[in-house]
Length: 388
Image 1: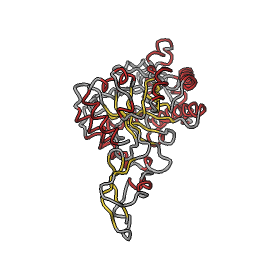
Image 2: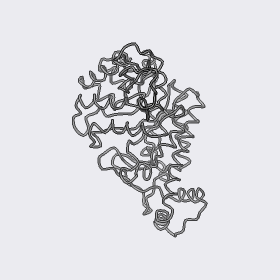
Image 3: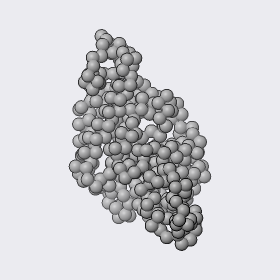
Image 4: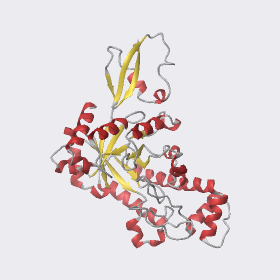
């Protein structure tokens, strides 16, 4: 007999058994064929409709400062949590030791292009707008010029220090985009960076000469005459960052994973701003990252709860999201009450939706907000423990 399966949260559900003589085509098609886990479920005998087939190594995490759960009287195994994603500022030897005692994986968030603190001492790294002025903060976020060599060396030293001081399972790159703010319904999308260094590097990249006597003149020419090449160069700058940091991570241990938190917009949204303004080329980053984590904060962006499932459906259709060389996908979803109360029912919906193909893990944001909400904790525990 041949089994037919449907992807469900945390694994696969056997729907029915089909005669072995019947072809796979017409029953198992599309993204499911590209799923590396699909071939594993075929090994399960067709001995009873309704049998649940669990995904191996399903990541059931929380993001932020997971120690808040301990402070609230919980332990990770009791909640079904097997991975924690810790802000670099919340990392400590004591936390890692206690997390290891509870046998959970420890991943560290690394704020790559968050430049607020660095810029206070190094204004030369300030991102420059098309008018030649320093970019204003994008709401609460202040980015940085990603071509500043001194800043890049600074971040490499910080990353090396984390890897030297702590035994972790991987690093997740955060704030990994050109200066902008996208976590609200009305994003802030300035055009940067047009500093002399960036324009000079763009000239080298394109083997061209940018005319103009002022920054605003040169920026206007670039955007009018070489916009496509400009966007390509900007995404290449981020890819170089990811490649460099991956080398630092794997120099410590080739078993360590590198993940990237990224904006969860579709390519056409906001006039193509994912690539155009943020510089995020997902197919390119998928060749470097071990894990991609779309940031699917639906309520913060004034999206319906169905948006998470819609995004996962889109992701599962992308050719670069399937196959042996594809990265893993561990979405991060909203668990906090912003800008208003997030119901436990909505939390349950987005958690389950985030585990649809091609996902092999999920984490809610943030551990602190969930620790203080018994209804959300009940949702998380029920789903996570059901998928041991």
